[in-house]
Image (cartoon, rainbow over all chains, first blue to last red; front, side):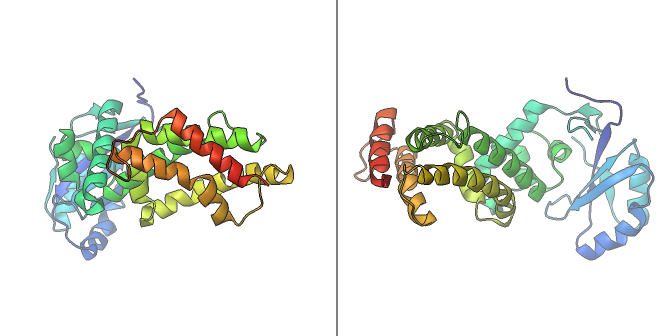
Length: 79
Length: 207
């Protein structure tokens, strides 16, 4: 299997309720500063407004806390 | 960063190439059948029998998905077009190789080929094709100009040349994929029909 565990990027996905680009701006102020986060985006076209994060470590808890304290809904998108 | 180093933390699963291929395949099917607007991550998840979360392991969003598939398919098409071909070939040998390769690509990959036709004029497609067009026109240009210099082919305006050299092939491919020709009789593009047409094309392009 072609898996590299060294430097592995973790993909974290969450269901949110962000709705417009203004919400994105609001969130980006806080989320971008999270250590270990390398890249993130929100698919506003999807009904689950999926927040997708690429991170160097498992920062699920930190992400959810951050999104919630910015005033949005955030849960892990379950399989 | 290694492309295969993604890991899905929510369930700590790892990248599964077969699953990714299936997602790509289903996405192409949806786009060919229903157009770009017919594709959503939710519908795609249902079609590929995976969870939406799984799709997001591989793709950031819908546009990223379309872009990634387009890049991969364009590369594949390009590679297959130039198999066994080099720009120094004689005009008749080189054009025959081009016809064989293009016919093979379309007949073996009808879904991918239709997908490419669909994306060709979309904003994402235009961006992706731009890169390929350059490489294509460089190689094909070198081939044709060499042949013109050697007196093997007429010097013509590019559009006239292309219409003569390739449009007949693509029309035959279209009939083949439709399954029928002009009179709705069954039509199959085989080697013999291809070579017959190619012979006439080569004759017409001779100085």
